[in-house]
Image 1 (cartoon, rainbow, N blue to C red):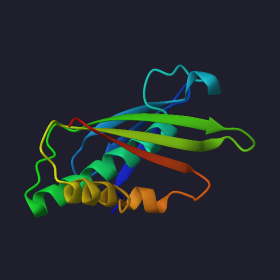
Image 2: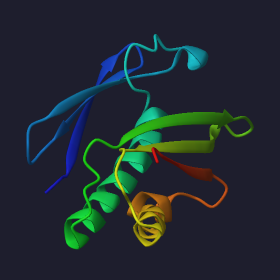
Image 3: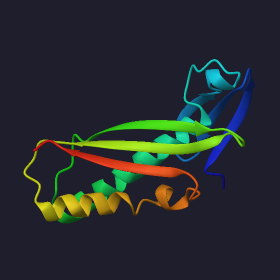
Image 4: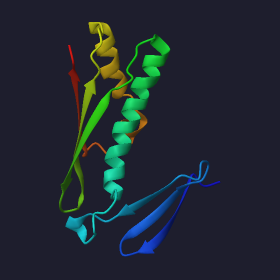
Length: 136
């Protein structure tokens, strides 16, 4: 059974459906590649997947070790490369909530992010930069 189905809607736009939940999302080609940029581009989704996956793994660490990471926010910056056109760099900045994390907890949270399956699946030519900003 498929995980996701997708339909081309024309005008460089697709509608994707997560089969198990029925959740839909629309992609659009970016403005710099003949699109309207009115939704996530496929490469935006890739960068978003990296950030969401890393945060999920951090969340799993937190649940398993009674470390509250609720309220963490993430900024994602994707930089494209040419020849061939591809994602060249993804920068993920984690803004950690204002809590009394120990040095060990901080280290384990940062290490957890590097074990996310998306991080481990991306081609080594895609530079991935994770930065943690601790409130205290």
